[in-house]
Image 1 (cartoon, one colour):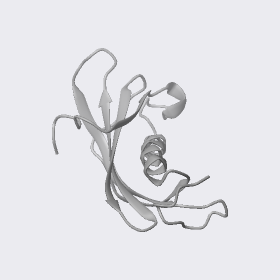
Image 2 (cartoon, helix red, strand yellow):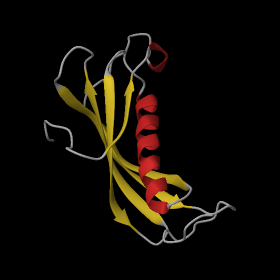
Image 3 (cartoon, one colour):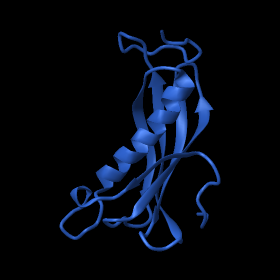
Length: 129
């Protein structure tokens, strides 16, 4: 595990809010996973030049908690492309509100498939109207 976030591939940045947390102030894992899915979806849609949907999340690991008020930065990088599918490595990092130090909180591999208007898989090199 590296101690610095990736130098590039920042896809999303958001502040964790009270509605995203349990009664103890810890952010829900599902909320964090949804942020990661949104970031990966941005990368997938851009690469597919159209609609793409999540079909798998592999190897999700939580390393540290996120608290209300933390800044969450999500990094997403396209690492593999198939005929209709894309694999995107995603890392989420947290930074306390008044400090500069960051820490990786979770990582996973998201798999997306490009789809057409009928929601069927389509080749990635096919541009949507």
